[in-house]
Length: 494
Image 1: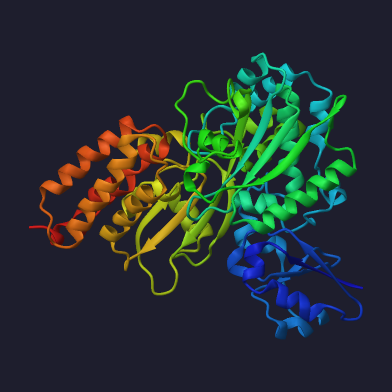
Image 2: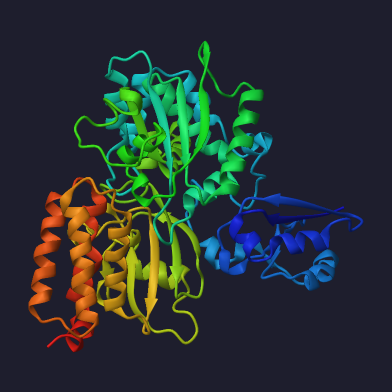
């Protein structure tokens, strides 16, 4: 029997994986197993085959390649692929290996050990282990995870909630989607550990509307978890439900998400009180993104000290980076914090795409700063980015080439904020519209040099007075574009 592996991830399917699977279907002596994705999207569709010496792989496969794969002609050992070999995979260690909806596969590759450990620990001991790990939320704020959990644990309430923020809306990010489609039991396990730590009996996964495959996989995984008793925490079962997001970027902000989850328009709430004290329906609630919960099982199974041994002094562990834009090798890379942007782009991104020359890179989604080539040696960690006036956000890296119009790019991001603002606070609601108008005036050749100073003043107001990060971060792409690429603005004004 020839056993072949082919990813069922949305990106692999978009590259033609289903067509290859169809060409393999009903071939005598061939078994096709659909797995999660290794995240090497530039190689998809990638077919792997079991051999006595380990798996070998064929890249960018089409149905015409099926005969030689079945005959075993060619192929490259998977463990020799540089893009994969040079990573430190922890959270994504099983990706490309296991079947997404097989609880047996998940357990046999180390899954559920963290939950088993947590079941025998007190809530205080679980939180202490997370504190030792140094884990910070893998979102924009990077807040210490243990601190939120401890606040929720101590909050007196008859009911508490755990909410996974799966409204992954940043441009160039997809690691949450990969977790949900590829290893949904990892997310469920992380949420159960959190529930055990804070005393919650209910949870929701707020999944963005544009991820139908992920939502379907999650619902099937929850059914399997219920059927096998995995959701039983103590005497009562943990109720877990997938809720489709409203398709609004601001619903990635935790309080707007909670408003949406309660059935209202996604509008941010003023803080305090923070959700850990008063969140969903006014009850203590932990809201974290998918990647944060997916990081927790390894911490409980391998220990907080193990996690803290990776990364830098204040950015512990590994960070999955999603490389996109004008590079040769787009895909997901998991490495310890501390590598430089240049390291990541050269070693894993493979350099620029054919015919493209580097102009700028943006990390952290549409609100991230725009860096020129001179800033590529910045270490990838929370504090170095904060010092540089930037955010690491969800680890999305988008590379722009020499043909990119930086004035149009700045206008685009300010217009994005104007469209996505929830409208509750004046600096964001009005400031983003005025910012877009100024940039459009400059583009039309009717601006003056004073408009740049006006944009700087406007940006400062938005940064300091907006109610949430959408307004507070909106000026960064514009201001860094002006700072690093002034020669692209000057021809537009008199």
